[in-house]
Image (cartoon, rainbow, N blue to C red; front, side, top):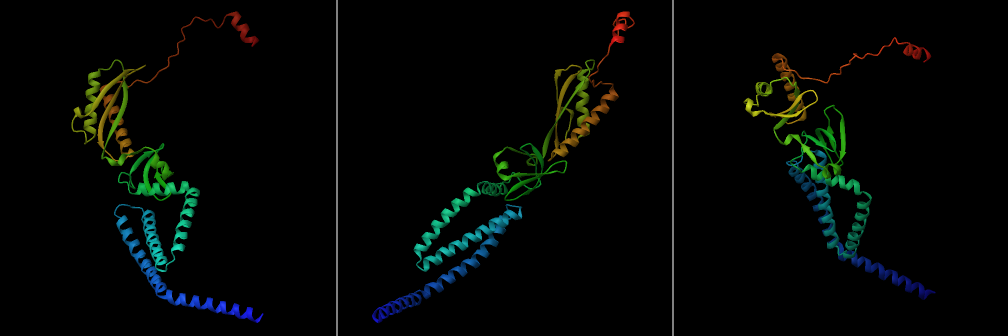
Length: 300
């Protein structure tokens, strides 16, 4: 029994001595690993600020800038951690950590597939020069001013002041019309005049009214005018002209102004803008006082 105790005690002392020797041997590596992590921490702070400043030149959204800066800081810290583990000769631990990170990343990616898709779509949208905050856009059946682009959604304010929140993935996968990319818009105006009208006079008068109403139209010849069809009660035409505008609201105001001025000019010149009229004709010879009809009304 005594021999077994002495053997066990000897093994314990030998094990402790081995651990102590290992600790003494790895103290320089441990100190160097701590220094590496400290350098990585301060480097991450510097890189985060530098990245935020660089991204701010391309991206207006604070949420996007902060997210990119944080991701860059995490990357620097992770690089420092891997270097520190390598300095301490923990190759197996490093391999296990990478394998675990890969499995965890795959599981998280599958679980948050929709969220990650919106996040990456938000990053892509933030770097697109053709989509900026303040632009007037139309997409997926909605039209309005872009008021926010973040990592989750794309926010529009419509003309009626309603807020529309659309997932970033939807914006990236669907067509988008940006009215603010150009400083000019074409106004389409459709109307009709009576069949008794002088069509040459109607065309010339309409062009002159548009040219006199809008400074952007230098002369009547700049206005496009086409008679399009013989309607039920009018000869219809299409009028097109360019204006300086960057939003649909400006376009609507221009169209409203054009309609008012054209109506005034037509009234002054006696040009008729017809509208559907229903005529009730009572020239039949039905005798409502006939005895048979009176008897039928009485019975009913």
